[in-house]
Length: 62
Image (cartoon, rainbow, N blue to C red):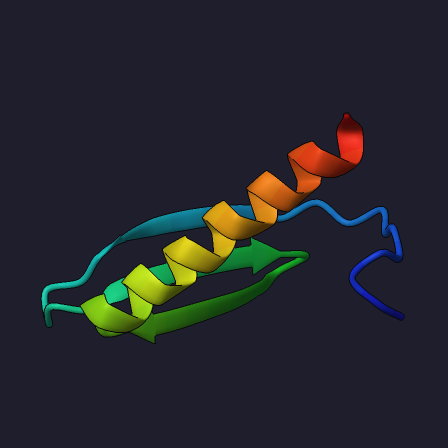
């Protein structure tokens, strides 16, 4: 499997700050919960990667 392999799975994603000063990505799918905590600098890096991926995806669609 790779990032290009489609799957028929529904998931919910929540993103927000924790009371410990971290940024949490909380993923829930099929009864499984995955909390992922990042310090703010790591969260900024992730946001940049998401922006770059979005830009690359737009280029593919053109």
